[in-house]
Length: 498
Image (cartoon, rainbow, N blue to C red):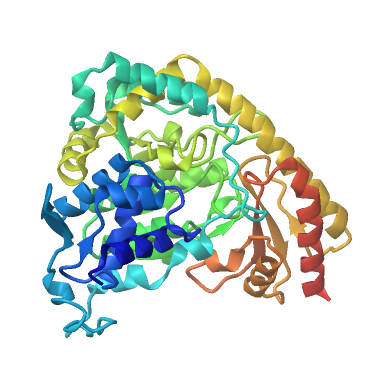
């Protein structure tokens, strides 16, 4: 195609597609449209593009929008030209030298060797996220409406106005000091964590925290205990670090190690004691003391993931496992992604003193931590009392949703003595436990066909599953929809019982 008018019509037709990057700014959409046309060789090497004035008129956009898109394409080498001489599609070797010499569809050539390492093949083979991650109970509802966005914007704007240049740099000391101080005060009061500010390191979330622990505290091939059933994403981190992942069963009192488990000589033990994921079990005091004793005798490190302790709807949050530790064997891990919004990507670790310097150095060398402006806004959000207010509000909201969901399911399933609905007064989901003969995977697929996303409990096991059930989230479904979708889910469950 060497007709500028035809090129203009082609770009207009691409931009008219409703699903073509609808949320991007106009200049970025135009850039993406031109780049796609060049990649597909709808715009071939040497083709002249319309002038910025003509294209702007044809697309009904500002001329500066077209100029900005052209400049970006030129900077990246997709087009060539100069002011007054026109803009042309560049000759890109990988695309050939025009339509005549390049095939319409590039041939896929299989690599001579496997593209992934053995580690990569293990981790990449299971697309765990879409299958196992907790999804909204009702279709399409991602309810972050309770987060105070305008207040958050105001705090961020204040941080930018004050403009401390050091906040634009990497963080080499474990994170923004006022945020670490705020976290220290919060954990001492609400979670009974034994901590001083030097022990707190800010991370990019729980996954990064676990990744650092896996690489700094265990060598390749050493054993890490994980709960079974348990959190799939933690398992992936340990597998990616080439650790031997060993499942330990869960019962009503939490992690239940057997004599055979002790023979594996674990280096790491990953647990969610305050609200086991996914069963909701709370680790009893006897089990907590047993676990700490095993860790001390085995010289192992306990990784305590306290992912949703804020969501306890009756009484005070349970004390942390770390608060019972007298041997400094526990790494306490927390996150703000559950209580604020997932994309904030701010988490933290409380490290035993002996580990602090090594973790700070490794985090800086491996991850080049930053986002200090976000950390500064979050520090003010906490110190000014907004965090506590926000927690109170969402506890009330999620508590009401939990009660409504539980009432609805009990109303329609209460006569089914073979079905149990979890009664824990905490967390962000309920577990509907099913008889052994029910295929919970098939049932979750059946629910999906009705627009309800629930997860099969059996898929969280590494060993052969011993329990069947459905995880039903209530955090992201409005109170008004719970009754309808709860009744629909109950009818689907009943159909599997017949």
